[in-house]
Length: 273
Image 1 (cartoon, rainbow, N blue to C red):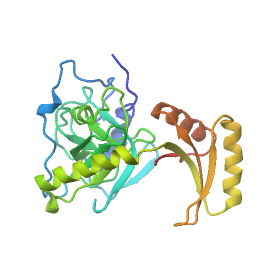
Image 2 (cartoon, rainbow, N blue to C red):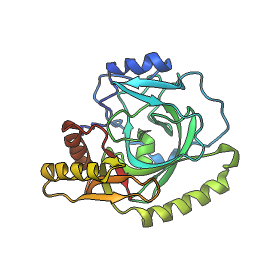
Image 3 (spheres, helix red, strand yellow):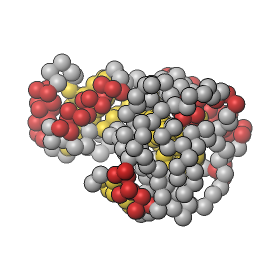
């Protein structure tokens, strides 16, 4: 069985989260794909529809492993690029954060801060595939993951085998979404995905002071002598950003982020360009 690290934080300690949002998925079993073959071509995407916020899963904020997460008031305009993971057999049949039953055969997902439920379009930045899922759970709480897909959603997107993938997540407004718009949006999204993905970076810090940014850059050079350590000023917010890359894989990005955290810089995060 291939071992996936993307669900290691869904264990008994997640009770911290459960107390804040009424219900959630947790367990101590090793996660895996189902043993039987699943033909995802026969599983349709989630169909966006207008729904009220769930009674469960939508506190103003909650804390997991000492970190506080704030739930967004609205999903309108949300777009984010980052690393997606997935969850399967270890959580199949358990309760999600809003009290529904998790099924790895349904097109659903977990997110740390989007309102529940929210419909999102997720596109794979490497292969151009695109899916629509319904967010009904909280997570993932693994460092540098932005969304946790159900097994079938991950398989349709082409990331089930590797366990993770580089994606763009975009919220959907059900009031303006229909099948024609969906088909058009996916075609446009796929074309952009094939042309827009370039490189993966780890941003170690952002500073108003160029001196502070330069100091971090020097520290990182000592930690990663064979890596390119970039310092650039963002014209929009006038911050000096220090980042490492380009990086070849998610696994390498995880190792670099962990090393940065272990050396006193706790907030490195993934940048995809």
